[in-house]
Structures are given as structure tokens and as C-alpha cells.
Image 1: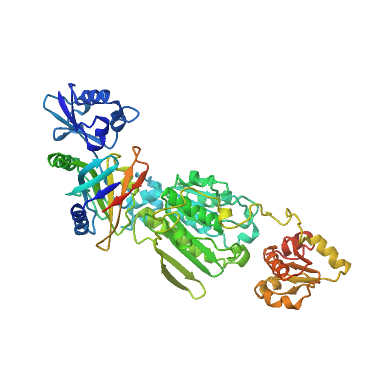
Image 2: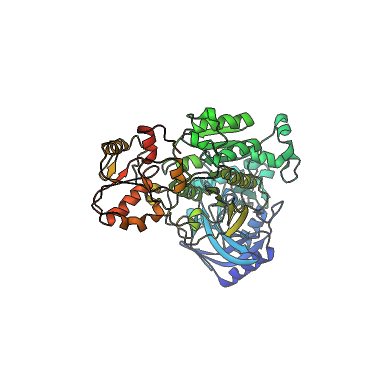
Length: 138
Length: 482
């Protein structure tokens, strides 16, 4: 399961709301203890998708590399990626799946009419054909 | 020695080390040395063919090795190698691979190509699209004709029926000469004649829990043109499980409904109707009739939504149930919400694979397919026996529980008309000792009337197997069938 600490969660929601009606994206830093992941800090990253961003996002690998570095400097780990779905449920879409990675938790925030609605966390498989929902608390 | 930084989730394979120093003259050698040292790591980074997985980017210091010398990029002491996944996504599906259009196709689709919202790109999307029509009947007819004309690249059709005379009043894809032919053959011929560029796939089966996922998985969009509850639930559940939109339509007499179910985050059929109605409560078109023009309207609403979904334009009919009343010529809209408790698409689904939909809808497994094949059970009477009974001049009561407008089409001499709806009020007019025989069109409604009498203590009640249709087949060919 993934647990997001209040400050990190507040920053993620604020980021998603501020980016509405476009999709936001970012990294989640924290610690892993067995099967339990704790997010202590969220890091807003730039949506690098070229084109309309209302329903698409793309992370620059360089930014992810920087996020990993930032985590190491803080003695934390990069444990997940988050992004928002404006006016859409927090399901793991085909696009999400086909551009995912099995190493991280993928948290999606559903922002409806500019306000936070609900969130889910997903764990994709290696083949990028399936993702299972992971327990999420925030 | 170069240093390879290990991403957090992979440290379980490196004895918790967050970086590993390995020898190797190139990045490729360094990675091979790493995975030789930690074999469990190999599957994380390389695929079965030994290539770096598609989602992994390899960085030497701050540069992607794809822009250096790839695997052969030299690695020196003090260099840092990082594994960075490429991550993207979004709430909508990525556009499908583009199909190209020939000059013939450009001419054919010119009225599409000059609409800015469609254009070449949109027409290519249509050509790349794969749509499955479940049913080649009333709704399937306009759907098949127009989607073929519009240039949907691959159209699959599921149907195992043959064309009969009662279809022709509305199933405009079939002609009089096609009566007796497989609906799939008849429909495919018309569609191919309209547009030879379209690839047609015929699935001559009854869609079932065993074959549905296998058939549906190869399509982008499923269009439900069925007329029975088990198949409707089956199509819905299969679409939810596969994550395919279900473009739904239904018709009855003068009214129709349409919506798009199971479209990325929207409600499904079970959010609207968690349970099927009791069997027999909602009549089918065969039982209740349908205005022949109606499926044209509803089928084309489905076709419109299908084309919109493919093109990704406009406002899809998601979360809205469109109701059409042909008599009033009015459209209304009901808001549909996704039910968080929905057994198939909710937060904690209980239906995670296809079930027995006949049983779910309360329909007995072995139903006689036609009146001719029907076996006469206790409490039933065959039409030939009924004829003998009439000819012998037996004293008995014959009741017809159809509607007055059906009685006007045809009737059996001596039968008293009491429509099923009014039947319970008339029970007092009969004697429990009477010999009573009840018929309707095919034997379904009269079976219910028989049960009403039996529950009231009547001992000699029999249902006419196959109804007046069987009477027309076996006793009196001058009686018209409808």
C-alpha cells in the first residue's frame, strides 16, 4: 500500500487544481518499508507533452533523473509518479498503461470541475498490459 | 569502474545497495556486468530478447545514451549510469497508428475530408478503427450500412440468425430475395457493395460467456444491437472487463434509448440496471412489436456516437441516457452516474469474469427453439390434439390471452378473448371443474395465464404449445403468422 503524508498530499492536490483543466504530473519521494510505501514529499514536474495537455502528460526523463537525485540528497527514495485526470475518473487509461513502468506506484488524482474528487494508485505490470489497484491512503 | 545508480524499487535485487560499481568499457558491458552480478535484476531491465525494456532509458551522467553511441558508449571511471523509465499517459487513449488513404479513398471520402474536424487525419482514424456490431438485425442494419459507407476500416458482426419475412419491415440491410439466407452473408454483401475498402469479419456464433472476450478483444468499440437481456449483460460485462466502450441502443414499439456505456470512467449498463427484470416482464420486439422506422433512428444515433468516439470529437453520449419518443417526436435526456457499488465497474467489483447470463436473467436453459420441436409436457396440449378436441365437440373452454389488435389479425374459432393483463379479474367467471385450454401467439403468455388458474385451484388447465403460430403451421395454413 501507499500512504501519502498530509503536507505532500496537500501539495499534490494544489498542483493538480492549479493545472486544471490540464493534466499535471510529478514525482513522489519517501520511504519503502517492505510492502508499505510512505510519501513524505511530492515534487511538481513539468508536463512536457507537446500538444493539448487536457488529457495527456509526458515526463522528461531528465526531470525524473533530477527527481531521483533530489530524493537521494534528502535521504529519500523516488517511489512513485502522480498525475491528474481533469473531469475524468482516476482510472488507469490505455495511454497511462502503455507509457508506464512497473517499478513505481502511479497515483492519479481525479479533478472534477476544478476541485479534487478522488484518487487511486496503480501498479502496472512489465508487459504494460495490466495494472492493479493498490491501497492508497492520504 | 563506472557507478550504476539503482532505482529504489530495484534495490531489493541488489542487496539494498543504491549504487553498484561495475567494470566495463562501455555502457552495454557495464549493464551486462551488473545483471551478471545480480541475475534477478535482468528481468527488470532486459526483455526476453535481451534488449533493454521499452520503458527504460539509460543515461550516462546527464545524457541519454541513445544520443551518444548507445550500448557502445564508452564508460570511464567516475561516470554515473542511471536507469530512467520513460513515463507518460493521460486520461484519453493515445491515437491509433495511422492508416494511409489511396487516391480512390480520398475521392470517396471527400465530403469528410473537407470538414475541418474530420480531415485526412480523422478519415485515417476511421480507417484504423475496428468496430464490432453485436447483431445484424434492426439496429445492426443502419449501423452496418452507414459505418461501412463512412469508411470504418474493420467491421465485425456477430449473428447466427437467418433472414425471415418478419425482418424485412425494418432490417433494411436485407432484401426480400435474402429470406432464408444467413443474416451475416446478406449484410456483408450489401456493406461490401457500398464500400469495398472495408474489411468485414463474420462471427457466426451466439455470443456467450465462453467466446465473448475472445471475440471482443480485437475491437476498439463494441456496438450492442441485441434484443435480449442475457446478451445485453454479457456485452456490458465483457466491455467493462476489457475496457472497451459499449455503444448501446434499444427499441420497443415507438420508443428508443441510446447511450455509451463503459467509456473510460463513465457508467456501465449495470450502473443503470444492476439486476435484469423478471423474465417476461419486458416484452421483446417479437412479442410487443416495433415501428419499423424506429431502429433506423436509434441505430444511427449509435453509429453517430461510434464515429465520434473514433474521431475523438464532440461530446460523447456518456453519462447520459437519450430517450426518444417517436409519437411525440421528442428527445429527452436522463443523467446517468457511475455507481461506486456497481458489481462490475464499481470500486470493489464482485463480477470479475463472465458469468452464466441465461441463469442471471432467470431464463431456463433448454427452451424449445420452435413450436415444431416443442415437447408436450403435463399441463400442455398440442395443436393437433386441440383440433381433434374441437372436432369431437368436447365440452371445454378455449381462452385466447392475446391483445385485441392481435385477435383481429387471426384467431381460433370459438376462443374467448381475455388479454393477459385483464385475466386475473375474470378468474371468477370460470368453474374450477371446467376443462380449460388457453392459447396466445407462441405459448409464453398463455403459460402465465395457466399458472394464474392453477394457483386459484383449477385442476384441468392446459396451455397450447406453440400458440396460434403452431396452429397456423400444423392445423390451418390459411391462418396468417405474425
